[in-house]
Amino acid sequence: MKLRELAHARTGDKGDTSQISVIAFDPGDYAYLAEHVTADRVRAHFGEIVQGKVLRYELPGLGALNFVLEGALAGGVTRSLSLDAHGKCLSSVLLEMEVPERQ
Amino acid sequence: MRTIRIGSGAGYSGDRIEPAVELAERGDIQYLGFECLAERTIALAQGEKLKNPESGFDPLLEARMQAVLRPCAEKGIRIITNMGAANPQGAARVTAAVADRLGLRGLKIAAVSGDDVLDRVLRDGDYALLERPGTVASLGDSILSANAYMGAAGIVQALGGGADVVITGRVSDPALFLAPLIHEFGWEWDDWDRLGKGTVVGHVLECAGQVTGGYFADPGYKDVPDLARLGFPLAEAAEDGSAVLTKVEGSGGRITVATCKEQLMYELLDPASYLQPDVVADFSSVRFAETEPNRIAVSGGTGRERPDTLKVSVGYLDSYVGEGQISYAGAGAVARARLALEIVRERLKLTRVATTETRFELIGVDAVHKGGLCADPAEIPEVRIRVVGRTQSLAEAVRIGNEVESLYTNGPAGGGGAWKQARQVVAVVSTLIPQDKVAAAVSYEVT
Picture 1 (cartoon, rainbow over the protein chains, first blue to last red):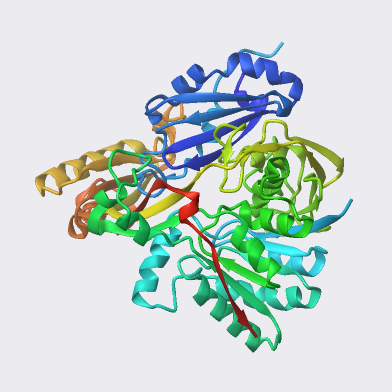
Picture 2: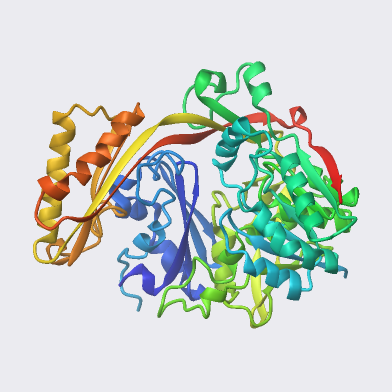
């Protein structure tokens, strides 16, 4: 199933770093997300878009994960050649990620 | 417990104006904040100010003031904004002129400056850049501006001085909303817990409509009613740092636990260390609860001692960028678009356009997501090519768009809607400056 079925997401930007929240619709799914949506999987999902590290911060109280993608914005909003210089679209791209069917 | 109501009237420079008027007229608020200053805007504004000493502030300042000054003056609502950009004093004079035209007498308008640290970072030697090797001085003649993200102190001073309107240059965005809390509740400057909680409130308010349903709707998954009349948020903030987030009754959009979570995490790196001039805020214990529809109680959050340094945004002339786009539709659209990209690639080589970075992409296939999301791009009914490159001169940047445009008569069949652009890039890098080298200065205009 797509991550989109379990979570919503929003992208923010700081310089050349993109930040994407992944928030469980049902807080009960948080542990499932934490197990399957790892920093490594997120890095693989975005492929060549991310040049630097991918960090994951956990916010169990909010049922949310925060992904920090370094070097993901082609030099940052002010000098990027990207059509979407802020990376606003990246949250929806992340929600396309496949996760195992929730039992 | 005493509470005050603070509205958020803009989340960026070009934001809608009516929601702020709605907040002023029907929000029962005491403060109205407008966050309008993006990272590089101040560098561009500095350039404007060099051409005309009376310019260099937000282009919509006059229109916003024209719209909200009367209802705010009538209800005693105090306005706080960073629309001063590179020229807070000039912005205060323009605001005073608008007040005069509206016949509003006795209005006190404060300009908060002190954020411009260009002379200091050039004179004082080694300010290392955060994003790459080198110092601020190494940017040489390309440097345009250097502005420190100041905290709430200047605004608090202006409010203490009786200002009805406070106009700043660069301050941290949450400070626009933290300042009235410090002023009203007399929070101490080392009350890290309350300053942290106040930063939570400021952070969720600063992007205005992004917490009331903007940047959120996803039909079938996250539905939001009436986005064309999106209501902007207001916080009912209490002395202990807790708050209720809501919006004007009957306005469009919706504020929910989900919209609040998304906005709390927006632009956040480590949730336990949100670096601000006045505090290191910790959002990890923040909780949201819906007490009734469109009323969200915020609790938790805390803070630690503020950092010793302030972030400084340094604007400089980086390069030039040229770009061209043209569309193809119908059967074989993607094949013709790919041919078009190859033609432009070869033309740029043949005509020796020197670029340091380029992109050849298909809007609708792989412009946003490299690798593409689409299973079979051959079936896409229409597609638009995009060629963009970085150059060292404007003349070369212009030639990139020209090569795309000339596909009209020299390229594949059925290319339409060509568009081109060439521009100089003003970019931003950062450095840090010790807090004690930056001090806010407040001046006043009275109508």
